[in-house]
Image 1 (cartoon, rainbow over the protein chains, first blue to last red):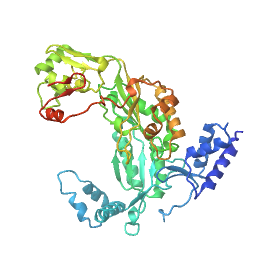
Image 2: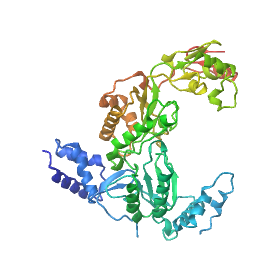
Image 3: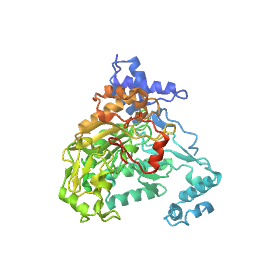
Image 4: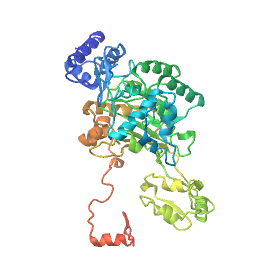
Length: 80
Length: 418
């Protein structure tokens, strides 16, 4: 069953949090994972749930040879 | 200021030197002085002292900022952070002087004052700023109506030739199409959601001044569908030397229609009997060679639009590849809904099946053109056949090489000519 918007945002956040340090997730990885558990979820809802997490600063886009969605952190290179 | 004996050599040649420019900026910007220092050091060590990527950006966007740091921050503190900002360029790279001054003022205030007009994606590239300057710089840019361009696994800022604004060969309004597509794909431009980069370039005609066929995943190249229009009296004038080839842009005064035009036609679709030039338009591949040579005698047809090609990229392992025709002819009228829909369908198929860092052209090679065409609902067409374009069952003998060396020519239709 499709998740309501707020629940979807939290569902995705937990997914990104659980993957932290183990696997870097792309937007499409998140979409596929959500659709696997909730096949009737609207793809646009997933897109905008990710946008909400990014706009709120709870998640950030990172670039390590490709673009990923991760939990914000201070990277080693930015030491000051 | 660091001592830069190796870089100084680059000032000695006949051409303007970027080192001279950087030294001029370094007199007022300490980070640019360190930039020269780290570059000199790289020349000496023969390795780069830069690393790029990471998590820097502006809130809400995943594109437009490319994190860059030096691995020698203690030695060169000015370039400890030296991030790149990509600013989305206007269609056709047309600016007012006021707009340029505004941009330069913003970059003088928030960055190194070093920039690049324009990067290979077409954007204005601001080179070098610190993390804490990113948000204020972004705020100033947006307050003046500018926005960041694409980077990472995103839709990259579309770019186009200047089109009908200054060029008589434009088959459609490239600048309008570029603007429309930029607006349409705003979400994907700022929020990377593709397997890898996705570039779009729009050329108004097959001369392809923005090199869309080689530099963009999606190449939209203006073409005509009907016959080339011929003014036979103007052809005679070119043959007689009254009109200069290429509008006078060559050193030749007069055209040899047979040798310079007919024999150089790649599909051999033209004939010239000394009086009349004939074109078998069915065989023309729209290379524009004849039209470029005789612009007052030959003009493209009036049924105009664009060909849509897909897949050019330059991967390290396989080497550079050119785009591949997907739709031989499409109407190009505002609001370009057909193009938007086609590009969205392609992106959907690619996002569904593409691996991380796999360009759309690589996916076509992996899954096949059939898979793409079925997914996007485009009918197969002869123009989509990329290879073989010539008879692959041709076996050369030593005598053939010898004859070629002596000047024998081979025509794909007529066989050996002499």
